[in-house]
Amino acid sequence: MRMRRLVLVANPAASGFTASLYREVVDLLTGPFDVTAVWPNGPEESRRIAVEAAGEGYDVVAAMGGDGVVHQVANGLLGGTTALGIIPAGTTNVLGRIIGYPADPRDAAAAISRSSAVRRIPVAEVATDSGTGIRHHLATFATGIGFDAAVVERAERAPLTKVGFGALHYAWSTARVLFGDYRTRLPHLRVTDGTRRADAVAVMVQLHDTFTYFGPVPLRLGGSRPGPVAAVVTSMDTLATLRLLARSARGVDPSVLGGVEVWDGFERMEVEADPSAWVEADGELLGKAGRVTVAPDAEGLLIVDTGPRPRPRFSPLSYR
Image (tube, rainbow, N blue to C red; front, side):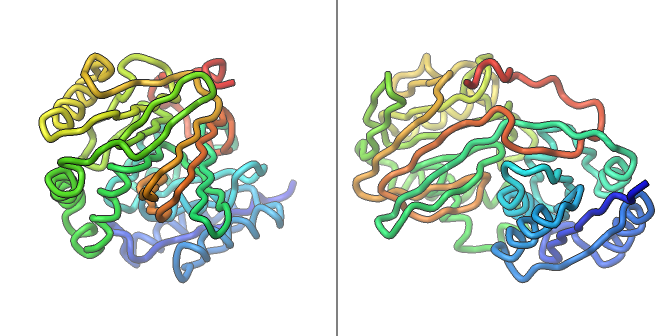
C-alpha cells in the first residue's frame, strides 16, 4: 500500500510559531505520512509550493501558520485533488475555526494524521483588473471591496503591531478608516449581479457563518440566510456603520438598516470602481482595482476532513 505524502508549508513568522512546536507537528504527521517540510520565503513561494505539490500528486498540503499562509496554499490547490490541511498557529485562524479544525496546532496535526477522509467546501473566485491585466485569486471565507479592504490596508502598514495585538489592532485600524476617508465617502462602486444593481461605498461578501478579525464573534452579514451573501453598503456614516457591525455580530439581518442591501443567491457579482478601490480576500490585500468579479463555487476547495464540525449554514443548492 502506497504511503500517503504530505507537504508541510510552515510560516515561522506566525504569532504562535515556535521551533519546538514545529518539531512536534512534524513528528505527529510523520508515520501516517511521508512528510516534506518547507519554510517558504514569502507568500508567492507558499502558493508555488502548493501548485507544485498538487502537480506531483501529493495527497495533502498542510499550512502551518495564520490566515495568510492558509490563503496562499489554498490558492495553489484550487480545483485540484490535493487536499488542504490546516495547522493553526496564527492570530485568528479564521478558516480553521469555521470548518471545525482543532484550535491547538498539535491537536490539528494529530487529527490530520488520523484522517483519511476529504470533503469539499465553498470558496469564491475573485478576479481583479487594475488596468494592467486581470489577476485571479481564491477567497476561502470572505472578500471585500472598499471599506473592509481599506481596513486591511491600514492594518498592514504596521505588520508587527498586527502580530502582537491582533484583534485590537484591527479594531484600531477600523476606527481610523471609519473616522477618516469613509466618514463622508460618496458611492463610487457600481455593483451588479445580472438582476440587481446598486451604487455603493463598500461591498462585503461572506461565504460561511464567518468569524471576524475582532475575535471569535461571528459576523453574519445575511442574518439567517444561507451563503454566499453580500452586504452592499450604499451609504455610510459612523453611526450606521457601528449599527451594521453590531447587528451582524448579533445575527440580525442588517438589511433592515437604511443604506444596506443584502444580496444572496448570486452566481456572479461584478463591481466597477471609480476611482479604483482596495480589494481583499481572506484578509489578504490584493491591491487596488477598477473592476472586480466575484464568482462563488460551492465545492471549489478540497480539505482534509478531521471529523465533527459546526453545522454549516450553507447548502450546495444555494449556490448554483
